[in-house]
Length: 413
Image (cartoon, rainbow, N blue to C red; front, top):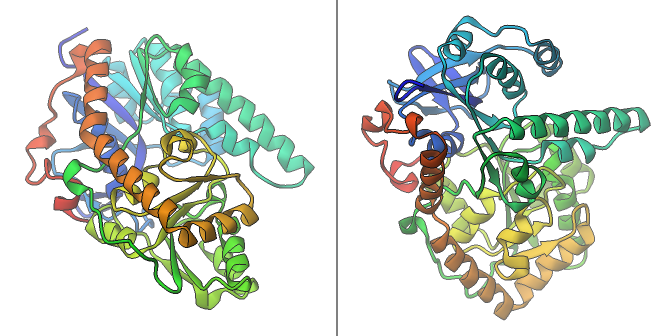
């Protein structure tokens, strides 16, 4: 193996405007936790033309190649048949690159099969339980059968990838317990993006009237937002004045707006377009009274929970992925059952009525945020990469780009 081989980093999306390459700031900062430790990373991403959330400009010397623009079924079939990929990606693989797979992403499975057939060394990171997401999808009997078959296929794919990795990074112990033991070496990480200086403790001795509830994330089925809307309906009809702000984008934006209308909640719900990771988003956390993550499946260690706690905001989360572990089984946040709007509404009400509990959760959350910084996670990743693939580690050229070393808050949106 030659010194400092190229590493093909697979996963993510970008948008091209002229000579500029645009990504989501949050996704790029997550990737950097790993890529900043690699000497020669090349980023294989999906080129998307219409996604306005892709608005953060990459440094000029970041090398990006496009993943094939194919539907999920096409990617699945080509993966199973081990068909060659586009020229740029195939060339990188054939030249002996280390391949780093960021899952879940269908293209990772196809790249994995090509890389294994060529003898490339592999590393991977798991950022959510994709099999669980399929198992938890709703529908008629035929759809549920199809979803369960897909869940079994995805689980088998995860296991095969894990067995072939030099090192496997798992976001949270829930994923690690399923797949970590299959890899030659595995480590639990969390992908947190804040630094100690980003932790903020605003005055939260009281809550506003009406109560300000916040959600930040992708509007998709697995986030369980319909249950948050139903819990808001319960609160209002039972005499607790409240407002809900949903920040993000996603395929369910229109249907969630219709659900709010059907429940008579239009005046109580505000939908805010996607906000890039940075100061504007942090201000949203500071302006709220409580953060709620009502997910029903496929979470690792949710970054939004840590973002909220780092801004002194008390949090409520369903028991999905490693959320319960992150919150210390209730020490740093309230844990509720998934798909249970009654328990969610009761927990929100208890949190605002019990000043002692609310202040304790805020204090514990801030303490946890100060201990769980980006720097702590980066050190764990660096040590793991140095032990598994030392020849691929180093300092990529884009780190010389102006502003590349600034903290997320300093750099802004």
